[in-house]
Amino acid sequence: MEKGKSKKIFEQAQLSIPGGVNSPVRAFRAVGGEPVFMESAQGAYMTDIDGNSYIDLINSWGPMILGHGNPLIADAVTDAVKRSLSFGTPTAAEVTMAELICSMVPSMDKVRMVNSGTEATMSAIRVARGYTGRDKIIKFEGCYHGHGDSFLIAAGSGAATMGEPDSPGVTKGTARDTLTVPYNNLEKLQEVVHENKDQVAAIILEPVVGNMGCVPPIDGYLQGLRQICDDHGIVLIFDEVMTGFRLASGGAQELYGVKADMTTLGKIIGGGMPVGAYGGRADIMDMVSPKGPVYQAGTLSGNPVAMAAGLAMLGYLHDNRGLYVQLESVQQIITGGIRTNMKRLGLNYQINAVGSMFSLFFTETPVVDFETAKTSDLTMFGKYFNAMLNRGVYLAPSQYETLFLSTAIGEAEMEKIIAANYEALQEIHS
Ligand SMILES: *Cc1c(COP(=O)(O)O)cnc(C)c1O
Image (cartoon, rainbow, N blue to C red; front, side, top):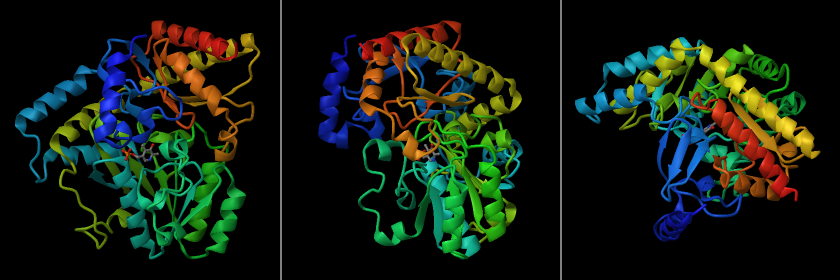
């Protein structure tokens, strides 16, 4: 595979962009080798600037759930562009968007649009603090909630990948207000809640974790969290930036039948444009300015082009709920194929999967939290990643990221992925 053009532009990139990328995990540091620069994408495939094509298993980290170049979304964007890129005034599309989101995620009575998942989570905890009059928040080791200061404590995703789960630059004061607990462990959580009685404003989590690789909640875990929050007057925030509109039309809360007090959204919600949102119970959201005293604003929030893309995407997902069943069966075929491959090769690595999210962990230990995710052999993962890339399958360039399927993946792609997996596993063990 010829990658000369990517290699050259990456060298150039490092002179003007820190590490050559605008988001750390893209730099391939965790897997060795150098990033490939993409030029175009259609359906299930991305094409790089050297002309190589890859089956896409990250799908822009979620948003491309319908595959690339879906005409429904492209046309909506083109239409909106003709009317104006931005007004800085209210538009009717924002109202339609808010109504659609609240109808799809029943725990949300009101919602505010922002421009990224990071903005959504930062704003949500500010509102939860304003609502409860308390300062502390609880997050879980290995969960990622964007790059807000409060969340860069025991953070997953790129922060874990770069070995910087506790980032320099976060003040001690901020760090003190963030308490961390292992995921999937209600006992430890109870202890911390009791030690900090009447001080915890919010518990925030990924209801299915994607940012330490895919880690589902164990039976009863989300229900247990709900109970603890009810008992102690704590705001339960489901960070569904990744899982929202991906695991079900109503997100993980629909799938597991647990209602959050507040929900944060991102990724799919913008159909590929930079969009985030946070919302929840009316009494909590009415704290937000100008209705209430908690300040939060955005020059480009609710941008008309972004709203057009998001509305087209969410409208489609709302009307085509069968698509989640289809996506899950694609996942089951692929993970089933990988399991068969491993059996043939005498390997026993762990696969975690929920709906259209899945991870292959290079460990034999069942992965239920960040401790167990870290038992993975990262060197092996790096080799596997590159072996797959060279066979035309683009995986997330870190063990601590989930993979995302799109509806554009058909029979032919499933076969190629499974065949590439067999060859790659064989190659890295030879
Ligand atoms: C991606 C992600 C974020 C951050 O969203 P950005 O748009 O990258 O700021 C927050 N929370 C979760 C669960 C995410 O997966």
